[in-house]
Amino acid sequence: MTNSLIDPTSSKRQIIPLLVLSVTMVSSASILILFSISHPFVIVFWRTFYGAILMAMIGLARGDFKKFKRLVTRENLHWLAAIGITLSLHFCTWFQSLFMTTVAASVVLVDSSPIFTAILSTLFLGEALRRRSWVGILIALIGAVFLAWGDFGDGGIVALTGDLLALSGAIFLALYFIGGRRFAKDMPITVYTTIIYSIAALSTMTICMTFGLNVIVFEPTEVAIFLALAIFPTVLGHSVNNYLLTKVPAYVVSSAVLGEPIGAAMLAALIFTQIPGPTTIIGFIVILLGIAMVLADLAVRERANNSTLDDTNGP
Image (cartoon, rainbow, N blue to C red; front, side, top):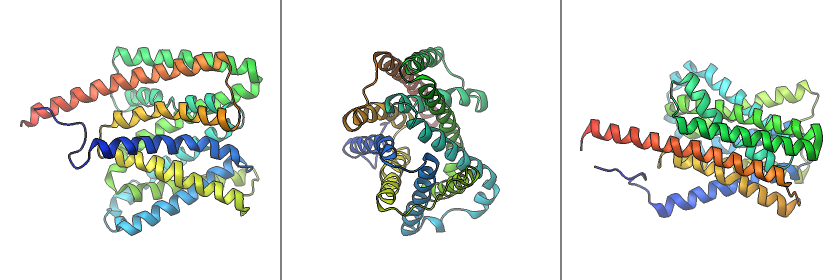
């Protein structure tokens, strides 16, 4: 018996628009960040702070905070704290990279997180990769080197540093996803994200204080940008993705990562006239190809695992 990839309570008419919505909303993040005149770390603080408030409001309205087991939260608090700090480091490194290199380079490098997720899952979760995935990883790494080479030629050491920060952001994002896969299942997603965003905001405030940055920003335009970051790429982007994970296989949602760099690069070209050079474009395409190979191979593995479970459980 073959099961549908889509949850019976949903339909393609619901899933496809939600996937398009999530990719569109997440693609707007880099553009909104570059509109701000605040320090990148300050932007991170307000995005996570407002994000926590919005998710808490949704959770309270849904009654989610009455459902989760406080004992589980207390037992896992140190892990939740680590995940929140990791999210803060992801945002801080990526936001800073956007001010040092092009949107196209920054976003495609930070969205190489599936590559690092695959590697880290192999090391820490025992999820062995097949040969095709390793080929995809190698292709993506070659593309990253090619892109960095082009950026160094066009923008010098500043652009190269921005590329390295974006790659660091990808590693932190991979760690964040692995942590979420382990601990998010024990509580409603609104509760989980409220806790994680709150810890991330607190961690980022500590970083800002360390660097002597003033996080008190009430300039109307800046507040509007911070709220937009919390609403669009956070609530309507990441939160929609979390909802979709309950309706379709993870690889379907993960494949949406291929759309964000393209959407963000197009928006940057239209709004900021950021036109990447030929070398950067080639590296951009090669990285996307490598990521696509890894995601396709993971999809085959997940389908095989699901078929095995279906055969074991019977009709």
